[in-house]
Length: 277
Image (cartoon, rainbow, N blue to C red):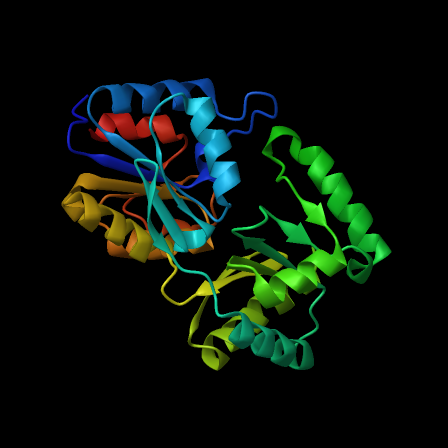
């Protein structure tokens, strides 16, 4: 394997974590491949919508030095040092959320910030959604986020915390997800100073300078690595910018056809990248 001087920039959910192993987190073949890649001189950067505390947990599972791009590119950590932090402007964010609530039927707002890993509403979220979220967290097993469920903490964080990403929740039904997708397209036009990505029942929202593609570019430029030496791999809407920006792009086979068409290669497991090296 020719790994020296190369980078693998991998998404987590549906990508590195595929197929899911709710006790071990990472498939053994994927884990051994990345360890071998790093041991032979390559670099691995986790590129995820998840927050830093979660990425650190994945790093411990890999047992190797791994860099982190989190909250869809809102922060970058290289060799245990932050080279980028891009929290949202709290006053602007509050005004936009107020406007969204008038225009769209939002079911709830979740947020990721520097002070807390993941905050979700409690009473405001409604009994049905609270039960559904609790069952979802239970089903997630080792993949679940460390979560604070408190309306007061959430509202205080919206005013004062360094917020990297917000998830605007609409609902898990097919009808709600279609409405969510259409609402996102409207949001893109209305709020150009933010970046949006569709995630089924919710929309991911961050600063306009916080996309996975831009963060990977900043990461490579910082390390003085050529763009054709990175292999980007993902499976969902927030990975499309990476597929469109970098020539060595890989999409997971279980992704929908629209996303797969954006990538150069389609693979079933992350460890299959080895044959392209």
